[in-house]
Image (tube, rainbow, N blue to C red; front, top):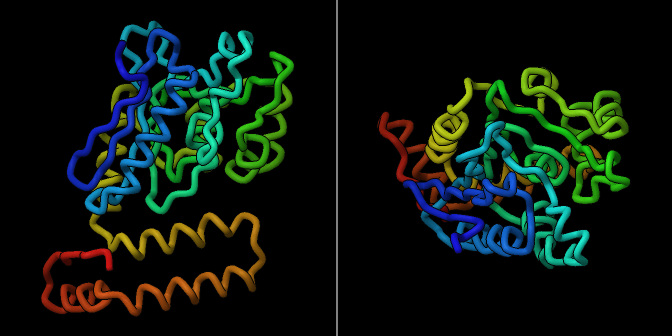
Length: 261
């Protein structure tokens, strides 16, 4: 039986692929454990600086990035297997990590699938994609972060409508509201995500990681706390080996050779 989550490395980029196209990439225990294992590999590899999550949609009439929780697993009493201790739902949505992850969406991301998207750092989507939290239609709630991450991403009014109706948000509108970073034609999400990842990988990985921490905290911390976090981040990068490399490379007009230390 094929692995339900695949992991491979391309240069500085770790690529995670949801691989249950026959089940609309719904999350079961195999997907949750496979996702956690893939994040472990990405985080542990010092040569990988950025991650991408994509989905295998081969054979699907209408592509689905992820349909969320496998309702058959929930109905059979296996709901607990959809979570891991460190990552929460899908082994990912609450996972602490230091490296940015881009999600490449070409199709529907609904319910837990949308919550995977919301837990990522950047979203690249195609024009045929859509995003939704459809749980209310099954007498469920979006319990994997969607109820608070979606309002942060698109604003309370738009999020409230989506959450209470369960209806999806089209990619163009998601782009306009700020959920989607880059909008591309069908079939081009992964290639565009790779371009974005490659751009990030040109920057100093320590500075990227420290900047990411502050940006993520900005949604819920006060200004004084954020100021302290920024000062700590600045002190860390200024005391690193890479600060000298960044300055010298600029002066010598050459690409920097980062050591991430």
